[in-house]
Structure formats: C-alpha cells, structure tokens
Image 1 (cartoon, one colour):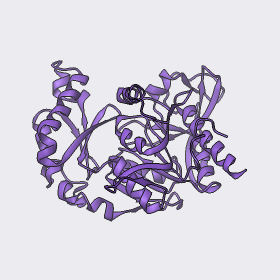
Image 2 (image 1 turned 180 degrees about the horizontal axis):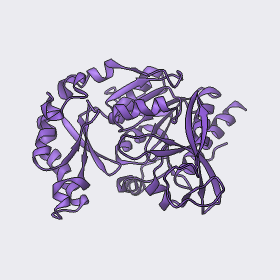
Image 3 (image 1 turned 180 degrees about the vertical axis):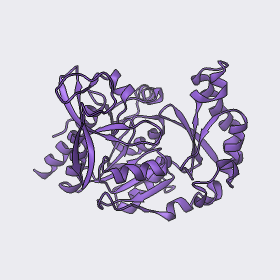
Length: 369
C-alpha cells in the first residue's frame, strides 16, 4: 500500500500538468543530474538527438525517436521519447511514464486528464505524435480549451468541447480568431493584448484564442536593464490587480517563467471542476454550491498556475519545481496548519513522475486485495 496516499479511500482521477510534470526539459534535467547517452552508452556532448543517440521505435502506430538518459546520482537509465513543441524546443517523457498511465487507465479505470498552458497547435501536434499518454481529456491554453480523447487512436484528432469555450466568448471574442493577427482581434482579452503591446511587453498569441503569453525576459523593460524579471513580474501583476482585471475581466498568472493572460474563471481549476462533474468524480461542495474537495482525485503539478486545481485534490505530487510560489505555498500552509497532502518526489524529473504514478498504482492494488 502507498504510505503517501494512505488517507485516500480510492483514486478515481488524476489531473496532471504536462510541461515540467510529465514532460521534462533539458535545462531542468541537467540540473537534476540527467545525462543523455549515446547508443554505445557513452555520455552525449549535448541533448540534441542524433543518429548516435536515437533509435526509431513505433508506438501507437506512430514512429518516434527513443533516447536514453542516465540519472547520475542513482545510476538509473531512463528510456524516453522526445515530445514536440512549437516554442520550447521539445521535451522528453519517459517510456515508463507512458506505460504507467496506460496501466492506470486500462487496468484500474482511473480517469486521466492532462492540463497544460500550451497553445492549441502544440497540444494537437503532441497528441498526433503519440509521444504523450492516451488519456480521457486534454486541457490546453491554461484551461481555455477542453478536448475529448477517451483513449481514441493517436491519429484520430480529439474533439473540442464547444460548450466549455463558449462560456468565455464575451471576453475572448469568437474562437475563429485563432489564426488572425492578435492586434486586430475583437474582445476585452485582445484590448489588454494591445495595452501590453504598447507598453513594450513581448507577447505571444500564436494558436491561442482564449489566452496569450507574456515573455518578461524578452520584454523591453527587462532587456533595457531597467528591471529584473522578478521586478517586471511583480509590476505587471500589480497592474492587473489595481486596474486591468476589474475593467477587462482578465487575469494574469505565471507559468514556466512566463505570464499567461486569460479571462477570469478560465483556468485549470475551473476546467477541472467542469470535468469532475462530467466524469461523475466524487466531490464535496459547500452551502453556496462551490467545490470544496475532490476526495478521490490526485494532482500532479509543478508551477504557479497549477496551485488552484491542486488545492482541490485530496493529494498531490510534485516531480519538479518550476516556480518559487509552489514552495512558498507549501511553507505557508505548514505555518498556518493547513493540511496539504502534497509530496515532493524524492527524485526530480522523469524518475519523479514515474515514482508518483507508481505510488498511485500501489494504492489501487491495495484496494483490490
């Protein structure tokens, strides 16, 4: 039995972030002690996949490139595949993680929901590539879009749930604006885009229709040396708190070192609540009808934009730390006596993801006995 999850009666669902939680990236992996190996077992000079360190494999009917990492602190080899991305250069997911998710869905009937801030085109490209787990639902754009997957074949495109996206049209404008110039899009969200653009922030709305990204490190105020990234982040958050949110009904949250601007109420937590009802997952509510807890759900996460949905789950696993606010939240909860059943995995990175999934399997196996 999993000692970490001994307070749970069962696990019906896993709500997992993707980048930094399931999919891991070079910079973080290097710090965590992972080294890519050549086919002959020698360390690679870099993380770039080449004919010397990759082997073609077929998974879910799709050919992909297998690489092997060595976690040097434990001398553990981690076979992995590269996950495509339009802007992050591609990350890696361990083959064991893919197999463990499949076991949880197919053997134990656990609902799996992937939740990411990634743009729509990246989410669909990853789904088609076969390099991410086959799950029940994909949530992208930070909660703005929900796609039905339900284990369908990789090459079959998931179905967008229009009823969810329709709730935010008064703020985002029509979803058909997805591939248009964001400076000409209609809706309060894009009014804010124009304001931040005029202020010199580096913005990215490519293949987003319900949110957009703010890259503080590439913004004029940081590049000029006037402010550090932390100072710029503090100031833009204050700008939203003092005026923008109330006037335009949009909010700002940090994700993987960038900001994401989206409608109020359009986030991973609200998408999770919607899917919990859709799937019939156990939930408790207060007298006002607001969700208090999902007593049979587990969160897997790493960043600030995950905190709200992670708080609603009965337990959580943190395979890596992408934002200091995660540690701050853990420390504040401990100080206030709040019972957060959140666990930092003993090893970070891909092995941490595998460890979390195995703990959930232990619990499910104990419930079968």
